[in-house]
Image (cartoon, rainbow over all chains, first blue to last red):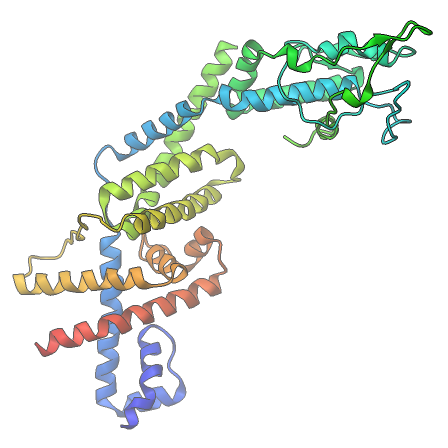
Length: 241
Length: 179
């Protein structure tokens, strides 16, 4: 009967814990508990042995080759060019539009005027991707008659007809080289340059009329798609990819 | 540009080969530890490997890749086990023991069956620790890295798991002896 009070300590000891002083004292004087300790140790060893043996199993021959094929098949199911095309195209479009219509420092955050808009602030995500940016060709002159954005922008070589401000070129080039250097995006940068096709119509601004007093085009600002400019900030500072 | 693409492809192939050699069998054994079915374990391991491989650039080093692979494999295997309760058969471990007489063999198989049943009944946290510890000679440190747990937690879970398994199997051992 007195052995029962040592049972928990004995099992703990069999599983590797050091015995408490009273368990150790009891074991030294009780042959039955020493036998029980041995049995518990054998049980623990059997459990470990069975698990270890069972998990020493090897896969069937050709396993690695099957995994390799599976990895390739998974790659084919989601080819890089397709996977990245949306990201790349979206990036290019957002970059282009945000740079083209980026507000100057003095009107950043200010409400957009309805009569003589100085800049179109962008908050709406692009819906599709143009082969060129018609916004730049048609609207910026009207929106900024005094200092057309086109004058400050230059045609970049990094993507399709993306206009990039001179002070952004270096950052864009760094981004391009970074993407090309990585195997996961290299094929995108190659493929994207060849394959991106945009839907021009989706980017056409609503028609505008000419102001008879100034001869400049009038734009209904409320109808202008609004684009988010923040991603450009993260790109030009070298982060976000 | 074509040369660049070729380099990238060759690099990717080397990448796969290295990771395959290093980690695919570990994934298989983790899956097998849950499913005890070789073909099922292979399928789960290859799916886990493909997913881990697709994310390899976000994992900072070999250990991170292996740890992520193990956890992903474990999760996929558990999901599969839960979804597929109608598995047709379970492989019995092939032991390299000397030939035993049929009675010993039957007793051992019964013990093994009960053991895995007891392992399956463990909570997930205890189960992962005991299975990984029994695999490829992993010590507490390796298991703690693979499961992203403190070593103290691994030790304590391992102890609890072994204790629970012993409780479940003690009766079987005692019954066998009294027969």
